[in-house]
Amino acid sequence: MIDTSFLAYVLVLLVTGIAVGFACGLLGIGGGFLMVPVQIWALAQQGIDPTLAARIAFGTSLAVVLPTALSGCRGHSCRGVVLWRPGIIMGLSGLAGAFLGGSIASHAPGELLKMLFGSVVLLGALRMLFASDLLPRQSPKSPASEPIRQYVLWGFAVGIVSGLTGIGGGVILVPAMVVAMGFGMFQAIGTSSLAIAFNALGGVFAYAYNGWGVPGLPPYSVGYIDLLQFALLAAASIFSARWGVRAAHRLPAERLKQIFVLLMIYIGLNMIGVLGWVGLITKSVSI
Image (tube, rainbow, N blue to C red; front, side, top):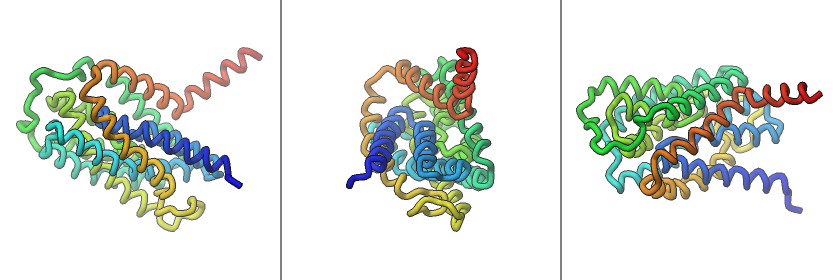
């Protein structure tokens, strides 16, 4: 007899993977802010300890970001908006930062990780909401003229956040590249997809290494990397990243920004528990 709960589990992850891939291709972000809440929910349904669930979700999310970002990078490269030199420099420093961040998160309490994740997503959303200069520029500056030090520092800082929260870091890196480093919007999206692939790789190493041999992990796990979740999410996201790339070069940037800001605010508030508090207050008032 077919296990309907397992089928629902598979379907939810596949749909999430499609949304993640589209987001990655669309805005040059890893999509971890979409994946992580769903992954934590799915792991909780299996009876996984909340702290383990958060670590597994972060590690597996970064494992999915790696091939998804590379798929998006390939699409943007074909359109000539990937700047390889700054992308590789930020990526290599981000790899080191993500390994450090992932190693710290592998020993932190689950509730703290969820609060940190939600806070980072909210800050990214607010930065996008109030930054009118994230719209496409007619004449972007040449990022090739920026000093390497700036790429290294931004890459390392975003890498640490990436490892700590299980996101690729594009929600921070894209605004920073446009506002602080003079990239055009589409240059930032394309180059970010390259840099966050390195971030993901560093985080994957950290979560696989630090989670090796930990008791209570789901079957078919490599450290804190859940291979079943990875397979389902990655299969869908790699495919849909191409749709996001096409949409990014057709739809108005302002409309895209508004959609993802609203989604990020909802997810951020939910992860730090604000929506739960609102529900409790509403319930107490009605009583």
